[in-house]
Amino acid sequence: MARKILFINQEISPYVPDSELSLMGRELPQAIQEKGHEIRTFMPKWGNINERRGQLHEVIRLSGMNLIINDTDHPLIIKVASIQSSRIQVYFIDNDDYFTKRQMDVDETGEDYPDNGERAIFFARGVLETVKKLRWVPEIIHCQGWMGAVVPFYVKTAYKEEPSFANAKIVTSLFSKALKKDLGQNFKKCLEFRDAKANLLEKYDDNFGFEELGKLAIDYSDGIIQASETVYPGLVDYAKSCNVPLLDYPGEQFADQYEAFYERICQD
Image 1 (cartoon, rainbow, N blue to C red):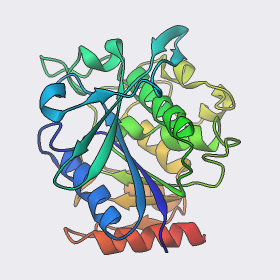
Image 2 (tube, rainbow, N blue to C red; image 1 turned 90 degrees about the vertical axis):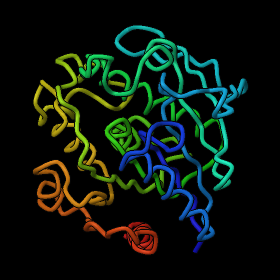
Image 3 (cartoon, helix red, strand yellow; image 1 turned 60 degrees about the horizontal axis):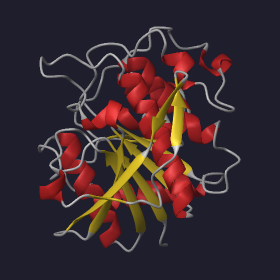
């Protein structure tokens, strides 16, 4: 059965250097599209992306919204490009402060950006608001990478009444790549939006680190995939303790198993 699947990726090759995350960001949507499913794909417009080489252009009708995070307005800019070899169209979430003038998750000295938490929140809300504008209703939302880790929380709280997401099932992939530092003591406050209230975050440490971010994603997901042979310690065990459906690492021939897992999640 053909499904509508939204992929929210932290990295996609060839727009950023090849890595486990960026290669899966490209290969998974392509494989699922080739199986006859309808897809949409999003990623951040990291500052190291060459817009001219990648042939990115702004989508005026989708841009122009302001998202308020930490009491500050941040303009949302949407760009789009196509990966010619795979016929995959990629939507990019952009903002001058969070992405255009920055590298990816670390700065020039190799340190995590102190506002990475805010960047993840902006990215998540930017994707969800753009999907609403597209008037496209995904049946499955698949998040890959820590930048999409707050999406499950928002879909099941702040956006649960939205027609675009009310019936969506959420899958989160766990990878080996992790943030080095926490997201700051202000992360919980920044995360508040509509029905995404602070009291829902009481079970998590105030210093929101990578493990807490993973637990938040797992708690609000309908399925978890171990996408790397080794993932961040404790998160797979946490998923098992929550009785969330879990797909063990499927190896390099993953497409059939991912497709079957999607179908299983939709039937639950």
